[in-house]
Length: 214
Image 1 (cartoon, helix red, strand yellow):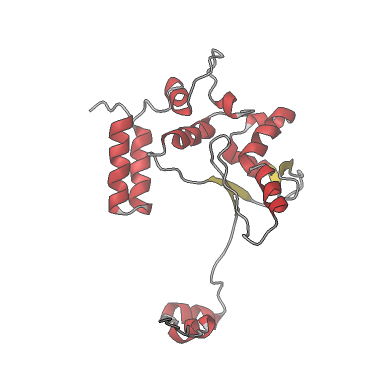
Image 2: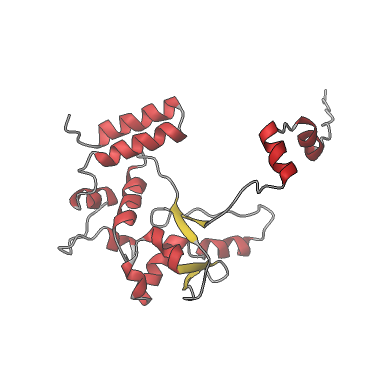
């Protein structure tokens, strides 16, 4: 026996209008013509991914050749490394400062220096990474502190030219994970964004994968 169900056609816009609640404060602002919101800066989201582990999105109906082309496009992080290889000025900035001085060209997947006359206000924001993602968390931490890296390997390289095997080891050797303040910041941020079960997982990951003084 085949059961056939008819899906109800809903008008989302009409449903929103019928169920919307306007408070007295909002109503007064609208009647008096006051601005309802403001915007000072544009936010550019910056990917944080491990080597050969970038995320791509595509439509299932796209041709295979188009999907393969997307796989070979540079991410913002890979383009950041490439920029540091050819532009000495870029080497004086960390990853999240780049959008203030360069704009992202999605067609060429590259960073291009902004004109000195540009009045656009832009901030870069690296995506959050959970501490239980040990390598990505350490990678993000290195990107916050290291200026002008030219590759993933460059981030793992110590001032003594010794190349660490992992980002976690590099962050430890550079003293970025020896300060418990970093874990306090991670837990403070988790309390705002995560559910209780996720907060417990993060706390356990910190206990298991780090050495706490007490």
